[in-house]
Amino acid sequence: RLASVEQAPPDPILGVSEAFKADTSDLKLNLGVGAYRTEELKPLVLNVVKKAERKMIEKDENKEYLPIEGLASFRKATVELLLGADNDAIKEGRIATVQSLSGTGSLRVGAEFIGKFLPGTTAYLSNPTWGNHRNIFADAGVEWKYYSYFDPETVGLDFEGMVKDIREAPEGSVIVLHGCAHNPTGVDPTKDQWKQMADLCIEKNHLPFFDVAYQGFASGSLDEDAYAPRYFASRGIEIMIAQSYSKNLGLYGERVGALNFVLSDKETATRVLSQLKRIARALYSNPPVHGARIVAEVVGNPDMFEEWKEEMQGMAGRIKTVRQELHDHLKEIHPERDWSFILRQIGMFSFTGLTPKQVENMTNKHHIYMTKDGRISLAGLSSAKAGYLAKAMDDSVRN
Ligand code: LMR
Image (cartoon, rainbow, N blue to C red; front, side, top):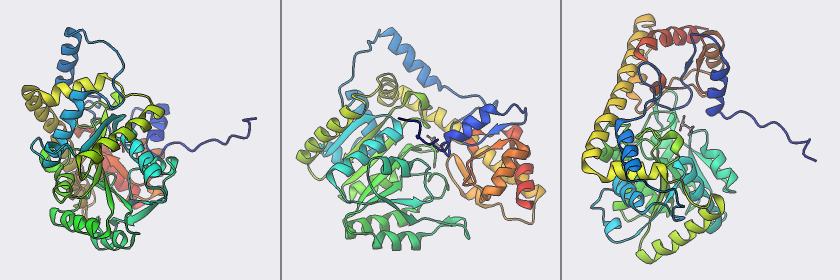
């Protein structure tokens, strides 16, 4: 009966990791998935995470189910980290927060909510966007369309195109926005452009849905990186925000994150939360406890919080260093080409502009694994390998 099931294509990002694993060359380098590596190209578990885990063992914590909406101390800490502890919406109880399965799970619960309570609403995604956004909305039965975002000519933001498309979207559309460190382009709107975007969302009664997966990784400041959702909330707009702790706390495999709704009054928040619980219960029942306890411990404890910020700046700083080194190597070996875009881009990635054919050359000839859209994860690059990457890129653009 199931013999007619067709083979699904490999995932555009995680499929790259599968291909990397299968490669036996010593030269191989995985710049596909956005996962932090040390200079030795090893995964990193932060000290604050180890400390929090030791505390959990000392406390002899049990493994009981969490409530459907997640761990109370995590939910308090996560929304305060996102919006600032003195935020009016928090004080007024106008926020509905559910702990969910990192960024993806939080987005999916949000997409299910849109499908159920705003049927027929289209979600607008930036062109390009993170490879999983399309599937998340499509699988939840929400139609999606693109809005213009990236201008390959300037390797910058096509703000005019973005405004035009969002203005032309039907009133009340869902607009998916990357809170900071846009994935894959590394190109963010300026503060002034965010303000104009908020005006536009008010004018068109759109529902902004922020994906905040890199808080702390763009500017190095947790507060600065939360500028956009905080600003929108301050304008009294109803917003949705998905959060992930995969990158900034390195909790990739723990699947810890949250979905927050900032609403206009407390009663609406209570009702929305009840519906989010209804959705989560049928999808995965209740979220995992381990990562939530780590976040609650680190974010909720002032000493640990300071230590975390230092460790996070260490990661962000190493990425900035290899970004500069890659740029310098390329400038040296291929000076006729303008590589300055690499330095202008922010976050974990560089959007290189390599074509799918050039990406094939990077992988087949140089054993460098990256996504087909030309994105490289600088978090997976070491100073030692920056020269090798630059040579491979130079070879690929010349062919
Ligand atoms: C990425 O874009 O590489 C990360 O967000 C990891 C993922 O789940 O795709």
